[in-house]
Image (tube, rainbow, N blue to C red; front, side, top):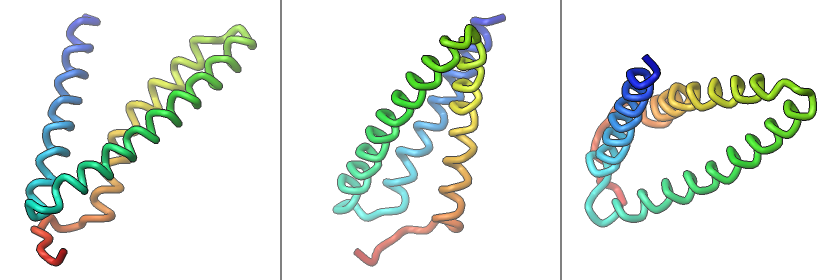
Length: 103
């Protein structure tokens, strides 16, 4: 059962990644694609640093309390909600997908 759930999660993540990468090439002209993906990569790197710092602090806190499983539960819930949050932010910033040609 756990293998099945991990497989479904990995498949869903790959589908999300494929859609995000193709969204940039669908919306921006060729000359801007590299810059837009670079900005996204930088934001992802900063997000990775912040999530790692948050996770370390969270795990240290709950380990000191003797409830490390609570720290893991919180972290997994945050990771799951990150996809929904990203989707809502994208819909807020880009309500209608159309090609941007004014660069």
